[in-house]
Amino acid sequence: MGEIRKIMTSNIEACTMLDNVFEVAVKMKENDVGAIPIVDGETLVGMITDRDIVVRGVAEKKPGSSKVEEIMSSQLVTVSPETSADEAARLMAEHQIRRLPVVEGNRLVGIVSLGDLALNPQSDSQAEIALTEISEHDQTNLQ
Image (cartoon, rainbow, N blue to C red; front, side, top):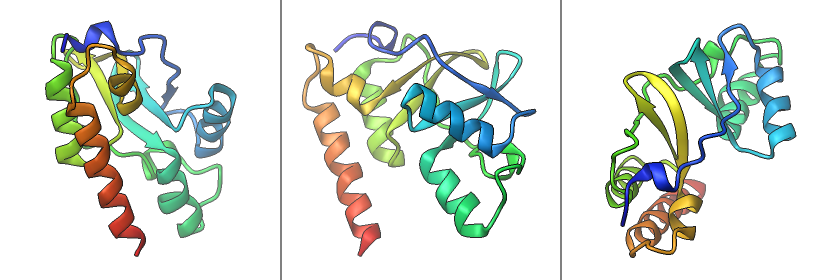
């Protein structure tokens, strides 16, 4: 399987530390995505997923006007554009994540999702294995 740069999404909508949770949710809706990177200039500083909004925001009764830093994940697993798709799938499975920010230095240049890996015609079974492991983990958390 090839490098992530060949399959990543590079046209990324991001929010900044000046945005609030409501603005992130609106951007998710407008772009039909489940995760928004948070940047400071071009530097990736965090990510907010739809699940973060529910678990760290709504469930903790935080208003939509809350700062993004209150609910974003800042300890991120990232890859470089040269990372192999196999390695990206392995990292996703290991860390139980569905999306990986792609960075050069600290600069956000793309995002790769499990869906990107699964749709890659050169994909081997790594994406399928990662998805299975993450889905099984999600199911055990629901019980």
